[in-house]
Amino acid sequence: MAKNDIEQMLTVSKYQFLNFIRSKRLYILLIITVIMALIFLMVIWYYIDPSKMNSNDFLGNWVTFVPFLTILIALFFGGDAIASEYDKKTGYFLFPNPIKRWTILWGKFMASLLASLIVLLLFWGFALGDTYYYFGEITKEMWQSLGLSLLYLLSLLSLTYMFSSFFKSSAVAITIVAILYFFVFGIIESIGMFTGIEPWFSITYSSSVITNILKNPYPPHIQEISQGGLKITIFNPPVNTGIAIMLGYFIVSAIIATIVITYREMK
Image (cartoon, rainbow, N blue to C red; front, side, top):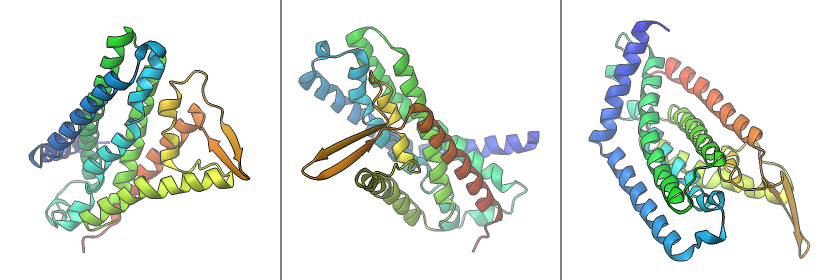
C-alpha cells in the first residue's frame, strides 16, 4: 500500500466522518444510546437486586442489549455507505478522480468504524460504570465480553458494507439489510432449534458468545429440551467458534465488497 493511498484513504475517512456529523446521524444514535442506557439504569435500580448476584451476572443484564445496538449501529453507519454513491450519483464525481476505488471503500469503512466505536463504547461505559458502582470490580470476563462485542461490530459492519455495495438505492439497501438482521437470521436460528441443525453460518448466532462469556459455568454447546412431544435443541456456540464465525464474515465480506466496488460500473 503506497503512502499516497493511505493519505487518500484518510482524506475520504475524514470527510465521511464529517458527513455523519453534518447529517446528525452520529448525534441521533448517541441520543438514542443515552436514552436506552438511562432506561436500563432505572429498570436495574428498581427491579434488580445486585446483592443476589455476582458482578458478571449483573453486567449480563446490560450486555443482552449489545447485539441489538450493534445491528442498529451497523445500519446507521454502513447501510447506505456505498449504495448512496450510486443513488445520489455522487460516484460520477468521486470515482473518475485519480483515486483507487478500494481506498474510497476503506476510507468510508474507517469513518463508519470510528463513529460506531464512539456509540458502542458509550453504552459500554454506562454498563461497566454501573457495575463498578455496585461491585467495585471489572472482571476478566467483562473485558472479554467487551472485546467480543467489538469483534462483532467489526464483522457486522463489514457485512453491511458488502450488502450496501450490491444496491443502487440507499433506501433499498438499508431495508434489505434490516430485514436480514432482524428477521431472516432469527428465523434461520429458530428453524435450527426445531430441526437440530446448528446455525453456525448465521452471524447473529455468533453474538451469543458476548453474553455467554459472562456465565459461570459457560452454557453447554448443545441443550435438548423435550416437552409434550416437542423436541427443541438450543445451541450455544463455544467462544472459539463464535470468534471464527465473526472473523470469517469480516474477511469474506471485506473481500467481496472490495471486488464489487472496484469493478462495478456507474449506471
